[in-house]
Each structure stands twice: as C-alpha cells, then as structure tokens.
View 1: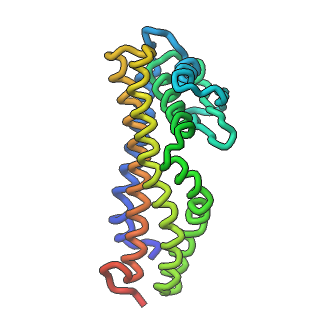
View 2: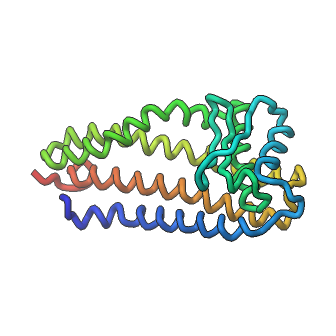
View 3: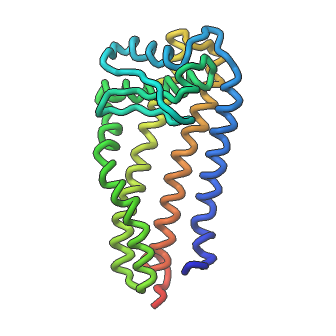
Length: 231
C-alpha cells in the first residue's frame, strides 16, 4: 500500500489544489502588500475601526510574530495581527486585518458556526493526530473494522473543516462590506481586498477537499466504499 498508485490518484488532486491555493495566497498578498490605501490606515487601525463600528470594546489588538499568522482567539478576546499586517497600510494588510475583525464580530454576535467550530477543536485535534495512523494500521493488518474506526476519527477533521468554510466566508463578507461602508478603502480598492480574501478562502476549500479525498481513499482501499477488500 505504501506505493499504491491509487493513493496518488485519490489524494493527488487535493494536494495539487492545496499547493496552488497556497501559492495564490502568497502571490496575491505579495502583490497587494505593495499597494497602499488612499486612506492610509494600518491593518491594526482598520481592525479597530471595524470593532468600534460594531460596538466592541473588549477585544485587544496585538502584534504577533510570523508571516500571515493572523488570528482571533475567542477565549482571550485577542485579535493577533502579524507584524507586516499590523503596521502596514496596504490593501492586503487591511483585508487580512478586517477579516480577523470579522471573526471578533462573529463572536460578539454569537454566530453559531463559529461556536460550533470552537466546540469541534478538541475532537478535530484527536482525529488529526490519530485518524490517519489508525486507518493506515487497518490497511496493514487487513482489518476493515480498524480502518472504519480510524475513518470515524478522521471524519472529525473533515467536519471541522466543513464547518470552518461558512465561518471564514462570513468573516470575509463582513470585512468586504464594512471596509467600504466605513471608508477604510474606496470602492475601487475593494477589488484588491476581495482578491486577497478570496485567495485565502480557497485554502480552506482545498483543505476540506484534500481531507475528503484521503478519507475516500482509505474507505475504498478497505473495501468499505465500492471496492473489493484486499485480504
């Protein structure tokens, strides 16, 4: 099974899509990180503007080390922006920062998919660390039951990624609308914000597809999905 061509037929497209999505994010962010907004607001200022407009006063905006490590932590109510995003007044920085502010707004508004995603984190972590190993062991020992057990664990990862999609798309849609409404960018500049956020969203789609294809491969290989089990 370690050199099974079928594995690459199943998983290969998802891997290629993930690589392409990652490339698109870096390329698009790099392009629009060189384009300054007319308003001249930094990423941190733009995020603060969205929070202010939403009446949110208990979220702290902080610098975070790394490149594109931006995130919102609902437990600590902290919006962490990577240094290039925090300080820059580029279209890319504003897009990323306001997207994360969109998550803070979701939290404040009790957006159900965000709550569900948070609940699924522990289960997804277990499925991510053990699911693949258990499925692989099931194939090695020619045990469909072990593969099925591993698939159940691994499905938690897929469920988490599927729930993540509306969370990410909704945060981006909030950001796209509010950056123009609050005058952070012009209507023309919003096209660049859209491209940056759309590229980022594609990475989540690619991850879900890659996980689904991996799961289907193991189920098929074990004879649990339209195939003949190899005993």
